[in-house]
Length: 67
Image (tube, rainbow, N blue to C red; front, side):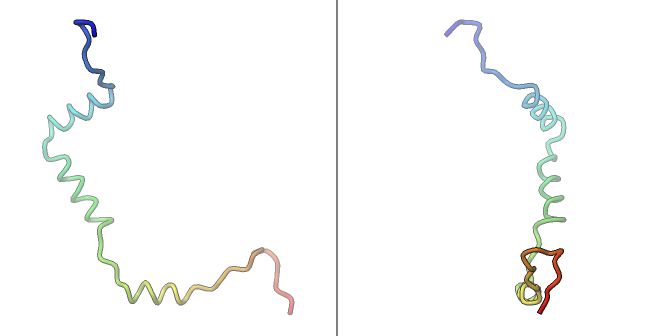
């Protein structure tokens, strides 16, 4: 290994490292934002009602059924 060798860091990795160094609360803010929109408790009974109310789709949706 040459003496001038150093581990490679991409520009994007350097940018993210600098961003985290400038704003140490960034990850906590991201987690709070995710919890606000995505991490929610699921109402299992409402989910079951939703699944029971689904109507199966016919194989070719543009064809009318003829009985």
